[in-house]
Length: 377
Image (cartoon, rainbow, N blue to C red; front, side, top):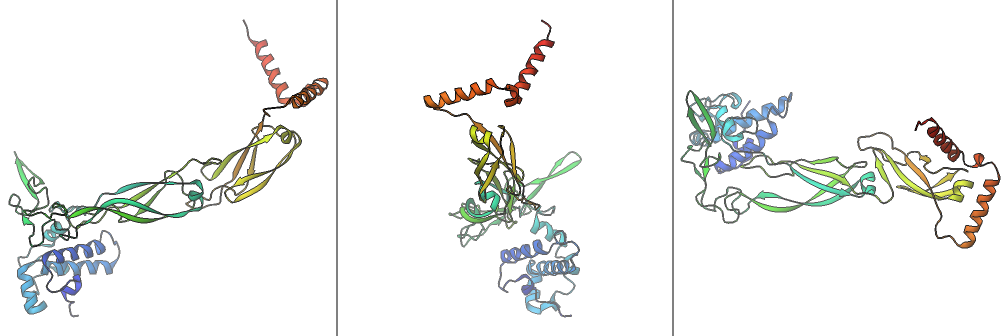
């Protein structure tokens, strides 16, 4: 079967420079690398095909022969699928180290560094966290400098190979019987020196820029949950892949509800009359108001459970409950007549069996009496 055109494989024009060829290969190699596509024969074949194309086009002599004679001019010079260098052009391990640096653990130059991950704290109201929402956020970051196309050098100039490490990015130090390899101190591992840096990015190849991102918050998130935006972190160095952005959720304190997992809690104040005689109250939920029946002789602290009025967890499962804790409120700012009525009411209680009307009070005082009786002074 006839081989595909090498330029077509990499997706570059025939007059593409070395930088464009290397950049195109990086993208394809990272996309189809076997480490990222295990058990995918098609991806492995595309990776081999791209590697072979790069091995030929990255070498000036091989590229010249290919441009003049096509595949016939380089047959036998490319490794089998790009994995074994022939014809003096260097093995694939050389290409691997040169292009990938330490992304996949290669032992070449200190290039192609993956960008750093970023974290953004997103504050949400409880309602937004429970029901889900989409929010716009602005995050600082770096983008490729347009003035120099990310090269770091002024237009018309280009980085030069570092004379200290001969463009390798690494130097070897002899220490007794051992040889230690480390990043070149002159070029800091890049293998290049920029003598005429870009005035816009000052040689960095990237500039700081605020970007607006849309974050889709799924229903049920809680404080501490993270939303990962792949590739939205810091841009990589020298063509390396960007990092990720982790959006950390922080739910604001609510004026009515407290959340505990999938359940919501709230306190409902009721009057002494409603607590004694019973009644019906309207209580809020995140879905609107509902009626809550208060039975007679309700004591403060009693919990009422409203089924499925809590939170549906973000990872699935049924919604929790809303638990309403009633608090009997002592009346304040009473008029003289109201106080007289309460005193009359207390007299009626005292005239009858007190144990019958205040069981908790009676049992508590009996417990106190037993406590003192058992104590030895």
